[in-house]
Structures are given as C-alpha cells and as structure tokens.
Image (cartoon, rainbow, N blue to C red; front, side):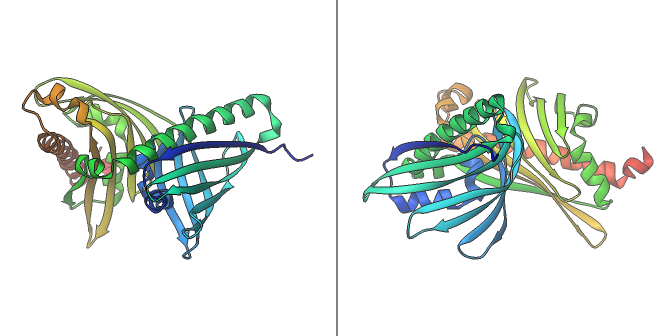
Length: 317
C-alpha cells in the first residue's frame, strides 16, 4: 500500500506588488540571504520555464539536502516544486508558491506542501509536519520583511571579496580550508573550534574568534564542501552587529598556481549599531567595521593557507 499523502498550507498578506515577490521566490540563489532555514541553493539546470535545483537547509535543527524540479510561471504568479531526491524521513515532497494579487500593492502569498513519510511512521510524520510548519512560517515572515523593506535591505546588505595568489597545490590549499578543526593551532584569531561532520562534506562549526582588542565572540555556521573547488557557508549564529552572514571559499587553479578567494555577503543589524559602536554609530560605520573585521580574518586565513601550501602542505607535515 502506498504511503499516505499529507497536505499543509500556510498564508500571509504582504504589502508589495506580486511581481516583486515572485522575483524573490523564483531566484533561489538569493534564498540563503532571505530565508533562515536555507543554507545554500544551486541551480543545476534551466530551460526558461523548468528548473532543476539543489538545496541545503535546516529542518528541526538538522541539515538536510535534496534536489527538486520547479516550474516557473511568471504570468500565473506561481512556482510549482517537486523533490526528485528526498532525504529520510521524507519519502516524497512537493508543493507550490501561489501569489494572489489583492491590489497593485497588496498580495496574498500561499505556500502549499504535500508530502509522504517513510513507512508512514508516526514519529517521522510528526517530525516532518513540525519542520514544514516551522520553516514555512519563518520563510513567509522573512519574505514579507524583505519585500516590504526593499530600500532598507539594500542599505543594510553588502558583499565583498578578498583574494590571494598561492604557488602551491590545489589539494593543499583546499585541505587547509577544509580542516577547520585544526584552525585553533593554525590561525591566531581562532581561539577554539568545535566541528561536527555527520554527513560527509556537510560541516557544523562553532568557532570562538579573537578580535583585535582581545575579546572573543562565538559564531556557529553550516559549511557545505565541494572537494578542492569551493566551500560555502552560512552563519546560523551571528555576531550582534549582523543579521545575516553568508560566504564562500573559492579555489581556481591556473598556470600551476591557485587563486583563493574569500567572499562575504552581510546584512547589518540596525538595532545593534549604537549598542556595539556607541552613540556616534551609524549604518555606514557598521558596514565599515564589519568589512574590516571580516576582511582581516579572511586575509589572515589566506596568508596561513598560502604558507602551508607553499611550504609543502601535508607532504612536508
């Protein structure tokens, strides 16, 4: 007997044009910066209407990954999705984003899910239902905030990158970045680090970072590793001055050398500006402060990765 199909539906009214909302729903590359559960998203294929994507996201605190097929319908203001490879306890999952235009500036967003669980297990059903409910509510609230405050979001969000040219092997550079558990012995700004890798190439990291004034702050991140090419991450616990921090370590081999690039996308927490920077603090100063701090740590990491790789890496060790 086929497993039972279950249905859930969540809705929210948003003060924004339907076309603006549709643009964010359709662009999965932007989801990690908008939706708290989404760690990373990649487009695997697209023919103009049908899209193949892979997502990494938190579900009840656990990192899950799956691939989905999506049908994008900008005229109908809807996006249908169906997982083609699910991860237990989900046996199958699909649904639809539907945007109902209430007026030129008001839209009702409906997020539908249908799903089956492995062996109709009651415990699995409870787990999946809770994850769908929690993630759907979080996604709708954050989507509402993003589209209703577009100008503020643009003011608070910025990105930047730092690079280093390394005359060493790609394998050694990647190993240095991948072996984050060894960073406390290798990087002066890392006071302590706790790493869990229950699934190969998906790392959950808690790191204590030492700042220039000697204070230490703790962040937590999920890192998705693509061996010897890139490591993408999202901080799930951020410092007070940020609401979102996503990043990437990208490695490109060329001419016998490696270009290693650290990229960051950050959203400033306006409510914490004066608390952290004092009465003279501003969003501009917060952007400068965060940029300088993250860039300094990235460049320190790249310098040590460069030294490790150029001095022979693991072959010497």
